[in-house]
Length: 235
Picture 1 (tube, one colour):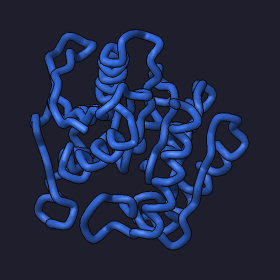
Picture 2 (cartoon, helix red, strand yellow):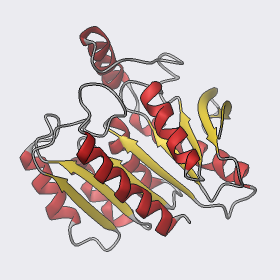
Picture 3 (cartoon, one colour):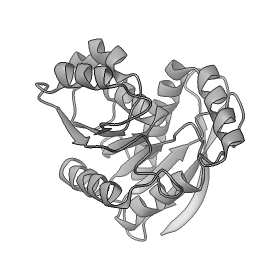
């Protein structure tokens, strides 16, 4: 497994942004775009990429906050940095972020050798919401969202989901109310491309790679489901 960085052209011509890349030792089976939390492409997100590379995937985590503060990283366990990350989220343009995800998907396909290479995405927190938006607005082939926020407000886009999607939903999520979770189930349980997994009693961030938020048992279960999903739909 090799670690590197790359630079991607924004689709609107507004500039270039960076990304962390983890490459498997052998030819990649497919590529996966890892979509950051509000804490940037920090050590935890880079570890997610490394784990995917060990499993045989080309993994890319784009720096989605580049228009606000390139290279921003924060620690969820430090109050001051948590508040700074929340501020970044409030100022972030999510529509431009989805366009940046599409640019990353395009770059990943190029790295795989052409337009027929399969590319999935997995996102966490804000990235979980962006992953759902990517499933409805981009050419991604398979999508996983962990504790995505505000997905109830995106349900009118669900008809545009053309490829498989998994949502991991902790039932005690402090950022996703029971009413929001109920709306997600009502709007998506019958969707032929979408699978929802509930994690009883768990809170937001339970699958973080490090820090106080992580729940080892639930993270291991969710990640095993994610890897099985990608193996089925990406190879």
